[in-house]
Every structure is written in structure tokens, then in C-alpha cells.
Length: 557
Image (cartoon, rainbow, N blue to C red; front, top):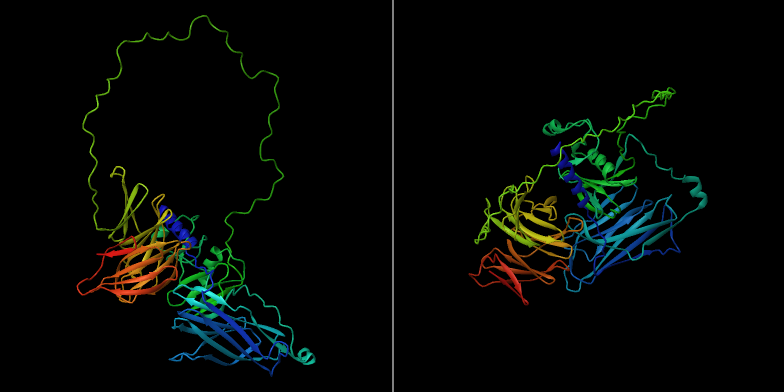
């Protein structure tokens, strides 16, 4: 039972912390739309065409940019173009959602010039015979990363397409749209194929997820042997049906709301708050929940009241007294007098103190290499290269009070660490890398964040404000940024050299040293999360594995 409860507690803590949200507009990006013919003229239903032009302007160089244009139900897309056209040319992706909206995605847009540039997106649409009189066209530009959108810029002003038609013809041919019916046998439906959330997605944590209700699905035998019938159950989420059930019971959202399912990695994301606009991703589908699954009653119904009394009536009072009178006092004393005190002491005196003080230990042993460390208060914390990883906590005041926290299986070798507030974050030597969160107040493991495939061996780490930065010892030299408020991945950049093995922060910049010969150092602007410059050492000055900053300089050894 203890094992089951601890597993459930970790799952709940992980669910509360893994949360992706976007609140900022992409700096230097602007969107402006224009529709022809204008709103005053409009277009004729069933025959008329409208041309929608959206201009995307960037004042800065930017990559990994995507542009999305949403065309409401009632408008059919006839022609698409982008100017200037990229080389090599990549066709846009077109997705039709369950609500009739057509979504057009232009992917992998980049502005490489120092002053940015412009892109113009043109879409020709035709109005259906029964289109609404006024249709809104929305567009978004956003920078994407492994978990969603790091920033989103919407249209400054929505574009409107006005539709005009013969009232007689409309009345004769167009009947009002019936309100959608909800089929209890189909509580969720596929809403958008090949799309995922740009924000507000919450990942169901770990392999086993909380359902809080016994189900007919077979659990792991070792867990079943420890579980009692009244205990909460855990179930692996391996289908969209299981994802629907989990999000219904855990996301606390009112219907209708969304969840997404990654068909490649079998990951379940619950929508919390605002998750739109959706991002194009052929590996993910978005589903809409119309009827949320509810828990069955956990208690028996209250019994109906009965007419018969439930207790015997109190006996009638009697006239006779129920107790005998107290006996008369006696003259003789009832106790012997207290014994006279003795002169002999009952304890030996304390020995005189010795002159030689008790010696403190000069070292503390540990079964494996301690490769990362920091000091917080009166304690030092050392990350060890054990499997699974572990952390040694040592009291610096007496150098003797020690304790060890061991990570979960699969979280191997704590090789980097940072501290923020009352929490520490340790990077592991896994592929993909894992960031383990530890509460320093009670020295307990809180949860973990798995990075994207390829972001492995998190060797060097620094922290600034609410973000942590972990260097991945890979052939392309990546740095992954983690939002500590939400404990989610907030993007990554490449350094331009292999194997970043050391790092030091000075002000708003981090300096990563490479494990190459000759060595290199990349200067990273943490505010914009971009590489500003790279320098290479002279031949023979290889593998700078240590670094410090002092008085405007950084020193690598």
C-alpha cells in the first residue's frame, strides 16, 4: 500500500507541475490583413470571390517561424500563394477541422537578414450559397519549439468577408443549421487531424496515470498484489480512449474541451484554459470532449427512515435511592508518616571535563564520483554518477550529518545542477536527458521533466530569473531552456560546435565551452535565447572543462 500511495503522489505532483502556457507576443513581428472587395461591396453567395492578403513583417532575424490562416466554414479555398517564395519551395499544409474551418499552415519560415523582412500570404476564397453574411478571417505567426509555441503574434485587426445574397433565394434554399446533437455513446470526436496545442497543454505524467476509480483494465500484477479494493487505481494511457478518461477526471475543465494524442509517442495532453491556435504536427491529433467521464458513486445510498424507534426508552425513575451513604470518618490515620531523609547521596557526581575536544571528521566517503555540487544555507549538496542518480546532503556545521536521496529508475547519473528558491534541479546522463526536481526543504524528489529525443547528457547548467539552461553533450551542441514556473521545456538552440561540457554565467549571458580540440566558447544571450558569437581557441587549447567569471572576464581551464 505504501508503494502504491507513493507512486500516486508522484503522479499527482507531476501533473500539477507539467504545464505549457504562452503569454507573450513575438518581439518584432507584425501582421496586417486586407480583403478585396471591401466590406461595403461584399461578394455574392455561391458565385463571388474574395482575395485575402496578409503581410507578415519582422524587424529582426528569426527562424523556426510558422504562419497560420483560419478560414471559417462557408468559405472554400480556391488558390494559395506566398511572396517572396522560399527556395526550395515547400507547399503549405491544409487541414479541415470538424467545425468546418479550413486551416492553412506555412511552415519553416525564416528571416535571415539583420533587419528582418516581409512575407505576403494570399488566399482566394469563394462564398458558399448558404454562407453567413459576415465571416471573420484570423491569422497567427508563432515561433515553435518541441513542446508548443514560445511566442504568438495575432492579427492586429481581424479581416472580414461580407457576403450578399438574394433574401428570397436564401429563404428558399438555405434552412437554418440544426444545433449539434451529442451522442452519449460517442463522448469525444476527432476535431483536428495532424494538429497539436500551441499553449495550455498539460502532459499526463509518467507511464502510470491516476484514474481514481476501479476499472476492468488489468493492472500490473505486482501492484495488484498490494492494492485493496478501496484504493485508487493506476492505469497506463496507451489509447485515445484512456487519454479521454484521464483528462475528464483530472483537467477540471467544463465541456466541451480538448485533448490531444501523439500517435507516435503515445503521449496524452489535456487542454487547460486556452490551447488555440493549434499548430500543425502530422504526429498528433486533437479531440473534442463533449461528454466528460464521471466517477461512479463511492458510497452506498442512505437507507430510508423507519417508523420504529432505534433505541430502547429510558426506564422510569424510581423512588428508592441508588447509592448507599458515605461511611462515617474514622479517628485513626490512613497513611504512615513520611520517612526521615538520609544523608547519603543517591547519584555519583559528574566526571570532570577533559581538556581534549572531540575531533570532527575530515572527510566523508561515497560509493561513486561526485560530479556536481552547490551550497544552500548550512548544507552542501553533491550529485553522484550512480545508476539511478543520487544526491548526497551534508551538514557543513559538523561535517557528519548526511543523508542520500536516490532518483527513480531510469534517471541515471546526476551530472549537473542549479538552485532556484527552495528547489534544486539536476540534469541526468540519459538520452533523452531528464531534469529531476528536488525540494530542498524536506529533501524529497518532486518530479521529472523529460526533454526531446537527442537532448541528452545534460552536462552544464545555469539559471537566470525563472529559466534554467542545460547544455546537451551532442554532436550539434544544443542548449535546452526549462521554464521553472511551469516545469516545462521552453525551447532549444544549437551552439555551432560539438559537445558543450562547461558553462558559466555572467549577467545576461552564458558562456559554453566545447569538448573539442581546439576548444570553442559560445556566448549566449539569455534574454533573447540566441547565440551572439563563437570564438575558437588556438591549437592545443582543447576541451575547456571548467569555467569561472570575474570582473568582466570569463576563464576556462
